[in-house]
Image (cartoon, helix red, strand yellow):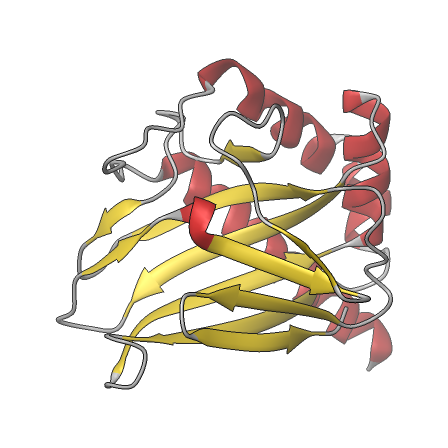
Length: 186
């Protein structure tokens, strides 16, 4: 049962990557365009694939974002973490940053604006938010190198947010997106 759950979690994370690599989404006001860097994440997912697939399961959390902070749910943000992916990304990028894989979609028949630079993370009373000019903080997973903007019905936007090395993903992290927030536990 534990092995099946591990394979299921890894399969979900792999599906997030595949969908992200084929995403045709566009970005709104602030373009995130790093076409040359998404291969780092493809390499991290593909290196030692058999060992990766039998490793610890991915941990996936969800954040439901309301239309105006109080209205009906408009967007779902899935956040995944995997220790083996973290090890591979840190080795490939030669950093100690922690990758979190994001998959963002709307509910059926909805359209929503998603701005990844409005995501906030908090741990131990320290708050961090990716910066537009920040180097190596957000990596789109689409082949066009874009993550965010208007998300239409049926679209999925995916990317990787690199947390600073002072975060401990094995302790609770609060994620905020405007008025919506959730405690992440990986």
